[in-house]
Length: 230
Image: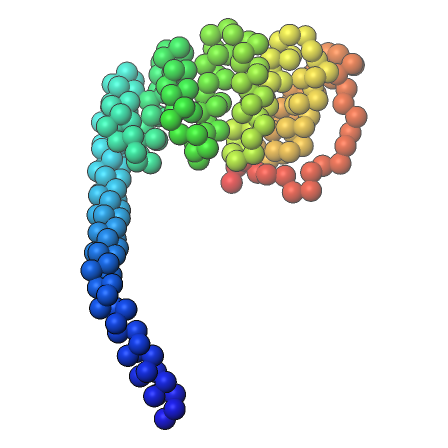
């Protein structure tokens, strides 16, 4: 009984405050409703945009090849830049340009991706793309640095492996047999059940036969190597 009376007394004391601040409360409630509406509307529109962009990209991938595919993907990337499909389209466009031998154009698109979408899920692939473009243009020193950058991130093991293999290949071409053999051997140990690991092991063996200085001391295998085949 006393608790009920105390509650009633409290409400009576609170009532004048509500009456004095009624307009302020009403404005606050209206503002909250507006924010909720705007957020819900944006989320809905963004969801619809993602669906539209995804469908457009799928259609392009199915119906285009070569230069037509690159142009169509880059158009989707421009039209739907705020969507995940737009990001994939930009990366696909850049990759297609690379396969067509248009290395400077491909590099520009990979760099555009890195500038627009920092810390993105596809950032490792874009970094590897820049390195490959520089490599294909004969800019070996710049490519080596770019491959090191790609190899230094751990988000995508396949990118790391590909970048390290490229570093070893450059070392080998420059006559740095010991450095190349070390990288190849590390790849063979880290990725034992993958094509790149097998090729790296083969190259390490060939280097050891050609150059005794390239012999790498055996080391324990990694505790739980990542299998690129999975």
